Image (cartoon, rainbow, N blue to C red; front, top):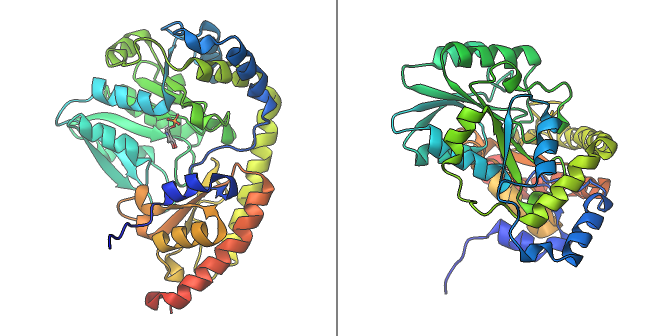
Length: 373
Ligand SMILES: Cc1ncc(COP(=O)(O)O)c(C=O)c1O
């Protein structure tokens, strides 16, 4: 008899319609009519039969640039922000280079860094203020340092950077001639967000996405923004010589055109859900939320004090309750055994399900887990 370990993603996709998807920071709050009409029209016109303009829809490019408000920067479209991250790591890093980064972090970027023969220097930020500081960045610089990774707000902790800290880190990049990778995927959820490109325009590559703010994760569209010279260096590694998905461009254009009208309500509901998730966690003995409130649309719940490990909890929540959260090992080599990540740009009903499932699952597992007793 062969034994296959439980595959959470396969299970969740198979039961997609019954699952409360709190596991990937996706956004389920954007009104569907924002993109539906544009997509229906594009499908009626069968725009998918031809290639898109290889350089990207000009209006979409302009919307992406004005959305960020960074003058003098050139936007570029890729298959999600992920592809931008891969391209820039390959193009800008060489064997032996060091990238100042964090633990926890969005570790896929670290993997791309390693593919280039470079390595990340992971500063442990699982303690207040749960983010980088300019002082710690300065202390970590060595002759090998080539880049600083500034994910703001940060997946998974939901921590964000005050404007003055962004400025200070950008100034370090400028003074030491380092590249600054500013991943702003969750920017729209962060009040008063500041862009590093404002302070160090020559050194900064800004990576953006419509996956989370516009609720278009499945369409795989994002991009980067940099000064023309730096952009040209990066786009040598572009594989989408024939352009990125044409329907994704149509949807992103429709969403960015109208974003100002609906993003306020998306953020309001997200913040309300954040408050509820924190209250649900606080009512479970041994569970804590290190970063209250989140500046993104996700948070970490530290469950070390419950004695229950994250992976069995992820499985219990999914299989018994249809609630999909993410175990921490995917986001932190050092602290991943302590936490689960929960995202909450979801309808309130999904949070109601979490409210029932989380305490019950921790209780059920505590009975079965010797360490928790
Ligand atoms: C920090 C960060 N950057 C980039 C991405 C990639 O987003 P996408 O490829 O969907 O644009 C994610 C996705 O979760 C993320 O959390």
